Length: 235
Image (tube, rainbow, N blue to C red; front, top):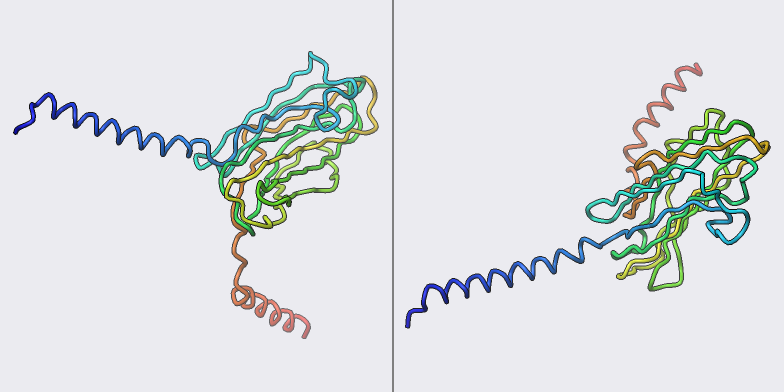
Protein backbone atom coordinates (compact mmCIF):
# COMPACT_ATOMS: atom_id res chain seq x y z
CA UNK A 1 0.00 0.00 0.00
CA UNK A 2 1.28 3.40 -0.98
CA UNK A 3 1.64 5.86 1.93
CA UNK A 4 -0.26 9.13 1.41
CA UNK A 5 2.01 12.11 0.60
CA UNK A 6 1.05 13.96 3.80
CA UNK A 7 1.87 10.95 5.98
CA UNK A 8 5.17 10.35 4.19
CA UNK A 9 6.08 14.02 4.54
CA UNK A 10 5.29 14.02 8.26
CA UNK A 11 7.33 10.85 8.71
CA UNK A 12 10.30 12.45 6.92
CA UNK A 13 10.02 15.65 8.93
CA UNK A 14 9.75 13.67 12.13
CA UNK A 15 12.88 11.70 11.29
CA UNK A 16 14.73 14.87 10.29
CA UNK A 17 13.62 16.67 13.48
CA UNK A 18 14.92 13.75 15.54
CA UNK A 19 18.26 13.89 13.73
CA UNK A 20 18.51 17.65 14.33
CA UNK A 21 17.64 17.18 18.01
CA UNK A 22 20.35 14.53 18.40
CA UNK A 23 22.87 16.84 16.69
CA UNK A 24 21.94 19.71 19.00
CA UNK A 25 22.31 17.50 22.05
CA UNK A 26 25.80 16.60 20.83
CA UNK A 27 26.68 20.28 20.43
CA UNK A 28 25.34 21.56 23.76
CA UNK A 29 27.92 19.83 26.02
CA UNK A 30 30.72 21.04 23.74
CA UNK A 31 29.55 24.62 24.23
CA UNK A 32 30.26 24.24 27.94
CA UNK A 33 33.56 22.38 27.57
CA UNK A 34 36.77 23.72 29.04
CA UNK A 35 36.85 26.87 31.14
CA UNK A 36 33.61 28.15 32.67
CA UNK A 37 33.02 31.78 33.58
CA UNK A 38 35.87 32.52 36.00
CA UNK A 39 34.06 35.51 37.51
CA UNK A 40 37.04 37.82 38.01
CA UNK A 41 36.74 40.32 40.86
CA UNK A 42 38.94 42.71 42.83
CA UNK A 43 39.38 42.66 46.58
CA UNK A 44 41.72 42.88 49.55
CA UNK A 45 42.86 39.95 51.71
CA UNK A 46 42.79 37.62 48.66
CA UNK A 47 39.28 38.72 47.82
CA UNK A 48 37.79 38.42 51.32
CA UNK A 49 35.57 41.50 51.38
CA UNK A 50 34.64 40.80 54.99
CA UNK A 51 38.14 41.78 56.19
CA UNK A 52 39.59 45.28 56.29
CA UNK A 53 38.07 48.46 54.91
CA UNK A 54 37.05 47.00 51.55
CA UNK A 55 36.98 48.86 48.24
CA UNK A 56 35.18 52.23 48.28
CA UNK A 57 32.03 52.34 46.17
CA UNK A 58 33.34 55.21 44.04
CA UNK A 59 36.41 53.29 42.82
CA UNK A 60 35.87 52.23 39.19
CA UNK A 61 36.36 48.54 38.50
CA UNK A 62 35.47 46.09 35.75
CA UNK A 63 36.48 42.60 34.62
CA UNK A 64 35.97 40.53 31.47
CA UNK A 65 36.70 37.20 29.85
CA UNK A 66 36.88 35.82 26.31
CA UNK A 67 36.85 32.00 26.02
CA UNK A 68 38.23 30.17 22.98
CA UNK A 69 35.78 28.07 20.91
CA UNK A 70 37.22 24.80 22.27
CA UNK A 71 37.22 26.14 25.85
CA UNK A 72 40.87 25.27 26.43
CA UNK A 73 42.03 28.87 26.83
CA UNK A 74 40.70 32.14 28.20
CA UNK A 75 41.76 35.75 27.81
CA UNK A 76 41.14 37.77 30.99
CA UNK A 77 41.17 41.52 31.53
CA UNK A 78 40.06 44.26 33.92
CA UNK A 79 40.46 47.83 35.14
CA UNK A 80 40.67 49.20 38.66
CA UNK A 81 41.08 52.64 40.14
CA UNK A 82 42.29 55.13 40.83
CA UNK A 83 42.23 54.33 44.54
CA UNK A 84 43.78 56.56 47.20
CA UNK A 85 46.48 55.41 49.54
CA UNK A 86 44.23 56.12 52.52
CA UNK A 87 41.84 53.43 51.25
CA UNK A 88 44.50 50.83 50.44
CA UNK A 89 44.80 47.58 52.39
CA UNK A 90 47.02 44.49 52.24
CA UNK A 91 46.79 41.53 49.85
CA UNK A 92 45.08 43.33 46.98
CA UNK A 93 44.17 40.90 44.18
CA UNK A 94 42.15 40.32 41.09
CA UNK A 95 40.93 36.76 41.57
CA UNK A 96 39.47 34.23 39.13
CA UNK A 97 37.85 30.90 39.99
CA UNK A 98 35.72 28.37 38.12
CA UNK A 99 35.46 24.90 36.67
CA UNK A 100 37.38 23.39 33.77
CA UNK A 101 34.97 20.88 32.23
CA UNK A 102 37.23 18.98 29.84
CA UNK A 103 39.56 16.04 30.44
CA UNK A 104 42.99 16.75 31.90
CA UNK A 105 45.91 14.58 30.78
CA UNK A 106 48.84 13.63 33.00
CA UNK A 107 51.94 15.56 31.97
CA UNK A 108 50.01 18.48 30.44
CA UNK A 109 50.32 21.95 31.98
CA UNK A 110 48.44 25.20 32.45
CA UNK A 111 50.22 28.29 31.14
CA UNK A 112 49.66 32.00 31.72
CA UNK A 113 50.92 34.97 29.71
CA UNK A 114 50.69 38.30 31.54
CA UNK A 115 50.55 41.90 30.37
CA UNK A 116 49.34 44.69 32.66
CA UNK A 117 50.20 48.17 33.93
CA UNK A 118 50.05 50.19 37.12
CA UNK A 119 50.11 53.97 37.52
CA UNK A 120 51.03 55.37 40.92
CA UNK A 121 51.61 58.96 41.98
CA UNK A 122 53.97 57.83 44.73
CA UNK A 123 55.54 54.69 46.17
CA UNK A 124 56.57 51.42 44.56
CA UNK A 125 54.54 48.43 43.35
CA UNK A 126 55.43 44.75 43.09
CA UNK A 127 53.37 41.84 41.76
CA UNK A 128 52.85 38.13 42.40
CA UNK A 129 50.88 35.54 40.38
CA UNK A 130 49.39 32.29 41.62
CA UNK A 131 47.26 29.66 39.92
CA UNK A 132 46.16 26.11 40.69
CA UNK A 133 44.22 23.52 38.69
CA UNK A 134 42.73 21.12 41.22
CA UNK A 135 42.26 17.64 39.75
CA UNK A 136 38.76 16.27 40.50
CA UNK A 137 40.04 12.68 40.56
CA UNK A 138 43.21 12.96 42.67
CA UNK A 139 44.08 15.28 45.54
CA UNK A 140 46.97 16.92 43.70
CA UNK A 141 46.94 20.27 41.96
CA UNK A 142 49.10 21.80 39.26
CA UNK A 143 50.47 25.22 40.27
CA UNK A 144 52.16 28.42 39.25
CA UNK A 145 53.50 30.41 42.19
CA UNK A 146 55.86 33.29 41.49
CA UNK A 147 57.82 35.41 43.98
CA UNK A 148 57.00 39.13 44.22
CA UNK A 149 58.54 41.00 41.30
CA UNK A 150 59.04 44.79 41.19
CA UNK A 151 57.07 46.77 38.63
CA UNK A 152 59.42 48.98 36.61
CA UNK A 153 59.31 52.76 36.93
CA UNK A 154 57.19 53.07 33.78
CA UNK A 155 54.55 50.83 35.36
CA UNK A 156 54.53 48.29 32.51
CA UNK A 157 54.71 44.51 32.85
CA UNK A 158 54.60 42.56 29.59
CA UNK A 159 55.81 39.38 27.92
CA UNK A 160 55.68 37.31 31.12
CA UNK A 161 55.21 33.61 30.25
CA UNK A 162 54.54 31.20 33.10
CA UNK A 163 54.02 27.41 33.01
CA UNK A 164 52.57 25.28 35.80
CA UNK A 165 53.89 22.06 37.21
CA UNK A 166 52.58 19.12 35.11
CA UNK A 167 49.27 17.44 35.91
CA UNK A 168 50.09 14.45 38.07
CA UNK A 169 47.29 12.21 36.75
CA UNK A 170 44.52 12.03 34.18
CA UNK A 171 41.22 13.61 35.15
CA UNK A 172 38.38 12.73 32.74
CA UNK A 173 36.06 15.19 34.51
CA UNK A 174 38.43 18.17 34.51
CA UNK A 175 39.20 20.28 37.55
CA UNK A 176 38.70 23.48 39.52
CA UNK A 177 40.80 26.45 38.42
CA UNK A 178 41.81 29.27 40.78
CA UNK A 179 44.17 32.14 40.00
CA UNK A 180 44.99 35.61 41.25
CA UNK A 181 47.27 38.49 40.35
CA UNK A 182 48.37 40.29 43.52
CA UNK A 183 49.80 43.79 43.94
CA UNK A 184 51.82 45.10 46.86
CA UNK A 185 52.06 48.91 47.15
CA UNK A 186 54.64 50.41 49.49
CA UNK A 187 55.90 53.86 50.58
CA UNK A 188 52.86 55.81 49.42
CA UNK A 189 51.11 58.74 51.11
CA UNK A 190 47.38 58.84 51.97
CA UNK A 191 46.73 61.13 49.00
CA UNK A 192 48.72 59.11 46.45
CA UNK A 193 46.69 57.06 43.98
CA UNK A 194 47.05 53.72 42.20
CA UNK A 195 45.42 52.65 38.94
CA UNK A 196 45.65 49.04 37.71
CA UNK A 197 44.90 48.02 34.12
CA UNK A 198 44.89 44.63 32.41
CA UNK A 199 44.20 45.49 28.76
CA UNK A 200 41.54 43.44 26.99
CA UNK A 201 42.67 39.83 26.46
CA UNK A 202 45.99 40.40 28.26
CA UNK A 203 46.04 37.61 30.84
CA UNK A 204 46.05 34.58 28.55
CA UNK A 205 45.51 31.21 30.28
CA UNK A 206 45.67 27.90 28.38
CA UNK A 207 45.67 24.17 29.11
CA UNK A 208 47.65 21.84 26.85
CA UNK A 209 50.64 19.56 26.36
CA UNK A 210 54.17 20.69 27.06
CA UNK A 211 55.90 21.73 23.78
CA UNK A 212 58.24 19.11 22.37
CA UNK A 213 61.90 19.79 23.30
CA UNK A 214 64.19 20.94 20.50
CA UNK A 215 66.26 18.09 19.09
CA UNK A 216 69.77 17.86 20.50
CA UNK A 217 71.12 17.44 16.97
CA UNK A 218 69.57 20.76 15.95
CA UNK A 219 71.29 22.45 18.87
CA UNK A 220 74.64 20.76 18.30
CA UNK A 221 75.23 22.32 14.87
CA UNK A 222 75.14 26.00 15.93
CA UNK A 223 77.03 25.19 19.13
CA UNK A 224 79.77 23.48 17.15
CA UNK A 225 80.01 26.52 14.88
CA UNK A 226 80.21 28.79 17.89
CA UNK A 227 83.01 26.64 19.37
CA UNK A 228 85.03 26.81 16.15
CA UNK A 229 84.54 30.55 15.88
CA UNK A 230 85.68 30.96 19.47
CA UNK A 231 88.83 28.94 18.74
CA UNK A 232 89.64 31.17 15.77
CA UNK A 233 89.24 34.28 17.94
CA UNK A 234 91.42 32.82 20.69
CA UNK A 235 94.23 32.28 18.19
